[in-house]
Every structure is written in C-alpha cells, then in structure tokens.
Length: 423
Image (cartoon, rainbow, N blue to C red; front, side, top):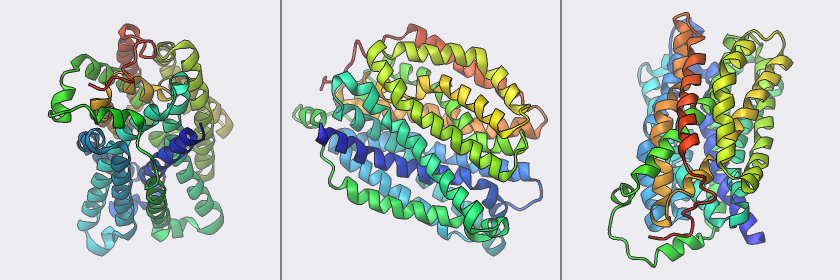
C-alpha cells in the first residue's frame, strides 16, 4: 500500500510540473504578449499568443506516438523522465528568449519553437502518466487513484496562478511584470522539472509492463494499435467534448473573465484560482464514485448536463456583476465537467491491453486534444474579435453533444476492463 501511494505521488509529480510549465504560458500571456507581438489591440495580442498556445498542441500527437512507443517498449518510467526533461528545456528556453524589440521576428519564432518542444513533451506525458497510474493502482480503487492525474494536472495550473498572485500582489508592479517579471515563473518551472526528474529516477516500473515484456512483440506500437479501431474511435469520441470543456474553463477562462466579464486583474486571478481549487477537490471524489457505480454514469452526467447547461451558464457568466457570482457559475460548470476529467484517464487505460496501452491512451487522445482542446481558446477569441463571442457557446455545446452519443453507446470499461491483458 505504502509503495503504491509513493509511486502514485511521484508519478503524479511529473504531471504537475508538466502542466505548471504548460499553463504558465497561458496564465502569464496577459503580461508577455506585448513583448513578442507588436500592436495596440489587446484582443489581437491575446489572439496571437493563443495561436502559439495552440501550436504547442500540434506536436502533441507526435509526442503521444513517440513517448507511447517508448513507454510500451522500454518502460513507463523512462518515458515519463524524458518527457519532464523536454519540458524543462522548453521552459528555460522561454525564460531566456529576447523580446520583439530586441531581435524582431526571431522573438515570436523562438517562442514558437519552445511551445513546440513543450507540446511534444506534454503529448508524451499524458499517455505514459495515465498508464502508469492505472497500472500501479489496485482494481477496486483504480478510478480514485487515476483521478490524481487530473488532480496534479489542475494542481499544476493552480501553482501557476499562485505564482502569478505572489508576483502580482506582493513582489512586482504591473509594469515590472510586463517588462521582465513574466520570465520568473518559467525559470521556476525549469527548476521544478529538474527536481521531479531526480524523484522519478527512483520510481519502480509497473508489474503490468514487466509481465508484458515477457511476451515477444515484433510489431511496432502503431501497427499493433491499429488492431483496436473501435477502441481508438471511443477514445476520440469520449475526448472531444470533455477536452473542449476543460480548456474552456481553464486556459480560456482567465481571458474570458478579463475581456468579457471585465473583472480587474486581482479578481480575475482570484476567481480563476478559487475555481481551480474547487475543480481539484472534485476529481478524487468523482473518481472514487466511479469505483462504486461505474465509469459510464459519470460520462453520461457530463454529456447530458453539458449539452443542456453550457449555453445558459456561459451567458450568465458573461453577465455576472460580481467576482463571487462568476466563481459560483464556474464552480457549477466544474460540477458537470468533473464527470469527464476525473475518469477519462482510467476509461482509456481500461480499453487497451498492456502491450499498446500507453500508445492507445496517448496517441488518439493527443490528436483529439490538438483538434478540439488546443483550438478552443483561439476559436473563442476569434469569435470575440469578429463580434460574435456567443457563437463559441453553441460550438462547445455541439461538441459535448457529439461526445454524449459515444457515452450512451460505449460499454462501461470498469466491468469489461482490458487491464491485465498482455497480448
């Protein structure tokens, strides 16, 4: 038990650092966008920054395939360590990149390269991390333990918000933050990655992988994965709505509160941080619930309530008069979205046998996130820039409704799990 808990904590630590580094870009975009993108329109600057955020997602399928291959053939631990090392490099690269005023067009180009590296890393982290957490968990508590992937994922984003609050309220002026202070959180991320790398060097490999390694496999992970077309399509379908909703209420929400609800900097940061804390608390609760009632009821909950409530929730949020009202509305949204986030990792892991699990979890997920999650913020900001912000509300609803069709027709993976199969 103690060994299992330690493995889950260390395995999750890499996920936290990965997402701290990745989300720091979004959390601090309000401060560094003008350093890399010239102009006077803040919406256009944020749109440019969001497009580079989306660029990081372009590499996620490549990362999902590459690190999935490494995890399925050489071990989950080695794959996780390499992913953290790459994220460290990307963060330190952003820390040291000069501004547009210093080197011109080379500045946003270097920023784009760093985001590509981070996207490659994050694409690899998800599949290997989800696989590792599910394989070290015992069968009766797999939903609970695997929910810590999103606990640390949201926790990484929350850490970025905490760093923002400290810098924003106690250490630096807004002018200093925009001039050079935005580099500090990226430097912190690079150092945290090195600490995590040291911790992961002492992780044990999962028993499932060690058992599967005894079975001769001559096929590539990708070729082996193609034997499971139904499972691949289930991963794509169940991810579409969930990832779009997740990125709406995390990366885009900070801009939405600032540019559409018109909260000030402190209110925006506090509401974002408080809603992330609330979301973090929900994950293990929903994960434990899935161990009792199954995975499918929670997915159905998200699909039905997301389809019915997204439009009224976002309209109400846009019209919110106070920061507290905004928080309550985002919290209500998280009560719905947690039905997906808390268990999506374990559902995907339970679809595939050990030999292709990391690739099966990571690759189709990364492709779907790149198409739907990575573009959510850019699409929302583009709708706003052309004067039709509310179109995004209908788009999000439609994507969730499409996923609901998958939830309604798929089997409950808790009752027909492929965990333990090594072919």
